[in-house]
Length: 240
Image (tube, rainbow, N blue to C red; front, side, top):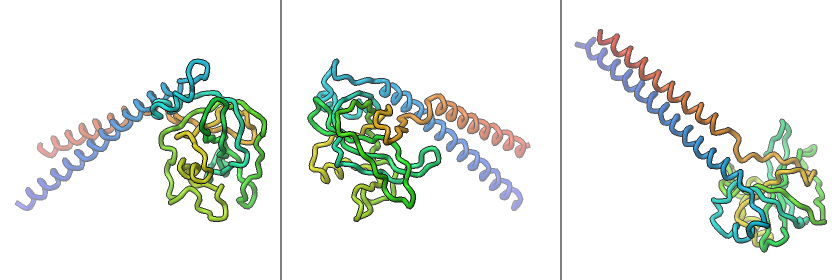
């Protein structure tokens, strides 16, 4: 009787283990497939080009912000050269540094654009870089990010250093509005070209393609099915 009980217990544990593995694999497959759908949608939005000639950017920005996430547009205007911040903890091509953040007053737009110009390598001794933005009007090609602006962070507030308000741990639109007293559009934009050579653009809205996510989904699905088949045959052998 004791041997029978042990046999039943081991069989039950094996079935439960297989069930858990298969369930986890199926959930991961579904998650990767959903990620693929989201990335495909994002790529579609990335192909949207907003132009001042065909429609007023002001009216477009007044609509749902989510609909213009990843959209691209070109504007001319001037930097607010006294408004410069450095977004910390960036690594590009193996080099530590900062993203250069500033404000841009575009022509024919009422409010101010928050712009990430790109990466600047950190100087020695972790001092902040010394940069100079052009004072004359320039044309920028920008891409909008209206979702997950803050990103992952353990910081409790944007500027953790009381002696350096322009060193940031993450982006918070309300922080810039409070600090400057200006009305800023509710999204961040990223420089795409290299108009402002002081910083190196590196932003990519889509890092992994939908095809790769679908491949991972198929991989997890096959792993789950394999686990189910192996579990079935092991159970059949025990029954024999």
